[in-house]
Image 1: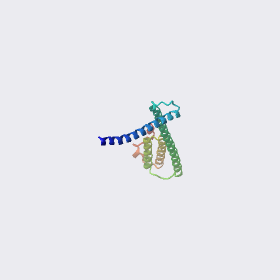
Image 2: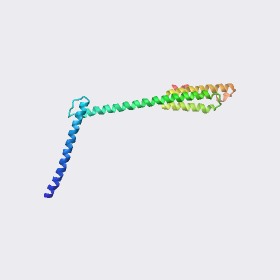
Image 3: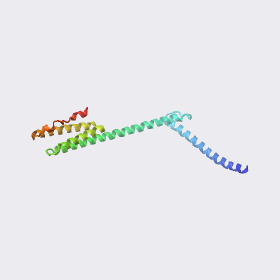
Image 4: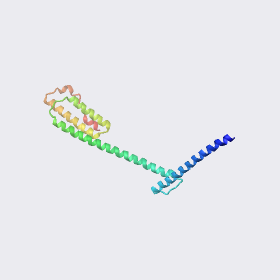
Length: 167
């Protein structure tokens, strides 16, 4: 029996110390919650910390979503600016190198693949630019064929409809 009493005394001492620390932590937490409630202009209610913490959590979630939305909008704005710059650069390069002979099928296929890629990504402004480029390429090819007495009978069955992609 004495050994049991000694073991229990040690356990009681240890448990009492831990219980006192836990009680002090709980009181400090309640005091902090009361201070937080006062900071946000709420009446401190010791029995309703869940309501206060729920409101703070809802605000934090909404704030994070708003930040994410702002970051996405900024990213899209930068992407659009970059697309406009690259379109202007391409237009400048095209006007600078007019007169060079190129393979028309590769150019028109390249333009069409760019249009398809823009549609998949939802870049409609870019897609419209590519449509205009494709129509211009088609007109140039037609003019060159007419000027060189090109045998159009062989290719009359293929007439691309670049305007159909915008519907």
